[in-house]
Length: 155
Image (cartoon, rainbow, N blue to C red; front, side, top):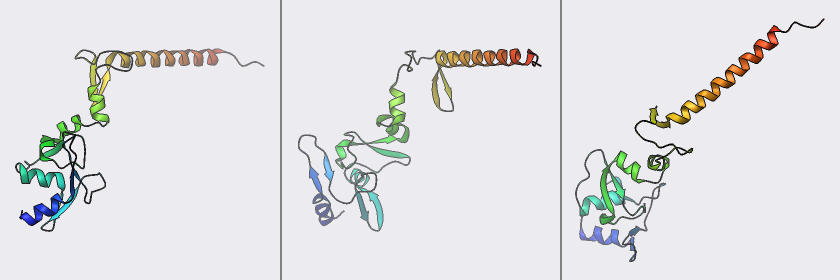
């Protein structure tokens, strides 16, 4: 990168003293990440500066913002991680659910009480309780149906 290119890029960065974030003030994509075009190739700014200041990004790796600010391009706030690790570190539904240690009824998600169905973690105690309720309801419905069918129609 030429000195002119570096100067042009840094004119679009605002450094926030208290956090250390380098906020990209230029064009951003629809997800809030800074964008840049270099040699006809589109790149997101945080990846571009990570590779310039630190090292090339390995295949299959993503860049995680340790500061949780998407438009931050400070290489010291960025780390190469796997897609899975990046998701777990986020604040979306996957990371929120992963952090839960108990089901909504207070049963622990431990080795004995936890089952996985199609990538979903479920509580065995609650699942069994639900099964028992459904079975009881089915038995009551069957008994009611039997009583109704045994009665003779009135003439």
